[in-house]
Image 1 (cartoon, rainbow, N blue to C red):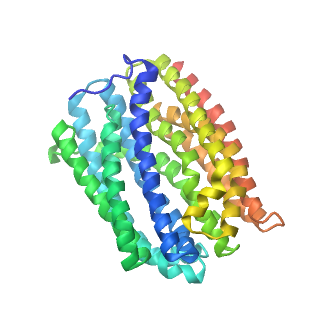
Image 2: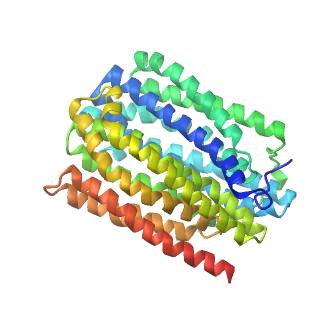
Image 3: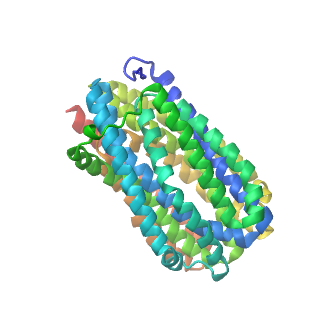
Length: 438
């Protein structure tokens, strides 16, 4: 089984080989989500969009949890791959896949039981609760295939194979786009969830066949080791918090925005889709830098790790700036295609004036966090995320949205949180790299 050698390959070439397919897959995922919102808005209106906005933080929270669980495996596996220890690789993959499935089952049970209470805690508007609950009841059932998909794609990135993730996402996106108008027209908002879950299952099946054919996917009961689960759990806990904290703060922000009416919630749902253009490039670089840096650390080449982070920052800032300019100029007009009202469109455009600047700082922060995680210090990345999303966003969004600033209080909080996270990441990255180089 061949894999990409991140130490011997030229820095730009190797990083782009990893980044471009994963980024393409994330864009397809964005299209996937936008298609849902487009059909929901145009077929069902502002109230359904607001219901989808109430569901979105729970969706991103559960997805982030799965990403965090599998990131612990990626940190451990990437360092072993560099040492070319095939038997240990198999043990890590086998043990952590079982761990991932158990976590997914637990999440399904807990969320299905507490779903009504969660929507109540979010202060979901009464007219949106039934639709949001209908959507989420179906969507949550898809967590098991979704978590297995995250596990397998994280494994592929450790071997420098990121192309097939894009292909499987393309299959899923096309299938979802075909099913959405049919099922939403017949089943309402729940139809969007059915289309999503079915598309995810098909995508996972295709990915499993690929992994088996390439020889990546070997699951043997005798290879499973409980001591590995302890190691992975220690690495996964900080990355789970890194992935879930944004969703927790988003839940609070959603509750705050709910107080400003249906138009504000519809606009907030569209903002959540459009700002993915700003969020995805840095997030993808965080994802791909983690195994790359881990590989370089396992191969005892911190100089190569530094080169990757430097190029990653330049690439991240360039892409964020390009998408930022597009949204500053056209966000309001783009939001009109979602079928939302003029009031909602104005909210979307106004919000972008605050978000674009903040995401430029986030472009650097995420690259630093990928480096920190790759060095095997996800707890430091966890501190950055907690500062950004828990310490700053939650209390200040509640406080400022209740003043004369209104919605602007929330947007100002977001901008400030990005600045604080950048400053913290800069310090943490220097400490981790210096400690490992000593």
